[in-house]
Image (cartoon, rainbow, N blue to C red; front, side):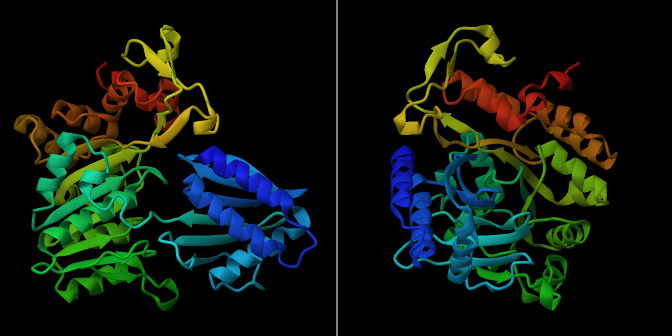
Length: 416
């Protein structure tokens, strides 16, 4: 489907008349339709010296799919701004808005930014309704699914979902919120504070920050605590003020869900400590930290390889490598899967090792020590999950290296 959609897009754009006053309208319509059909998560429109480059992010990787006439680039971006109800005459400031196409279950967010040669625009597709709505839909490992499901029954504490940008953190957070609403929407007060609200969740009172009016995440959280909430979703913890307000709320009888940018579960702990969060607060409030990535899955055209060099140091035997075919648009990959590690002081594992991990947090130990102790407490690390995925033929060593980097592919540094 991706290659078919991209081929159709190229033909449709080539057939458009650049002199037609409706060129921008029709070009945008075809770009958005092709993006949805190809399963793109984002469309990038980047001004270049001789064209407006169009790139689709497919399975987490950007691919150039078209080049529009340079002189018509501003008209195409302006058409997107009209659809998002933004100011078309302001090209010197960043703007953000939503596009809600008629007859489609896919919402889009448009972000524009002034750049060399014109405005740069990025369209992000929100997930279709009905996809990834429940925890069972995410593809979590059985041990993580069971542990997380149990922790969602707690009445206080914090569950953080970490990872880099584009790793599906918000999707997982919404799935947790829907699970809570499904379990007890009538009996519990569920609220959220987001920037922005990405998906409406029935049974949850959702609010959006408004920086222009002085309503930022930290301020909104303090006022939200007076709304008698029991479960609070904070869209993202970005600074110390938000972290302190959120974690203090979980100390006072609220269940907190939030996302956080970090490369691993142990790094999440380390970054919060570096932000100035008191160690006792982390030890007392954190129920679990999920850190996740979204590697690409191999297409059925993958070929086996016995060359040890192709393993890139992973402790596996024969591996599969991408080949490329029309079904995967020549990339060798189709779709993505969730690679996740969960650090918890309460779920399973060895109690004595979990206690040692807690003492290390109180002692402000560094990230390497925290990760070593988490693995000793039977946390299945991201590198272990990655090796299992490669051994099962789900993905390739090169894809794991792309997603985790060389340092994230092995736990050897944890066991000198």
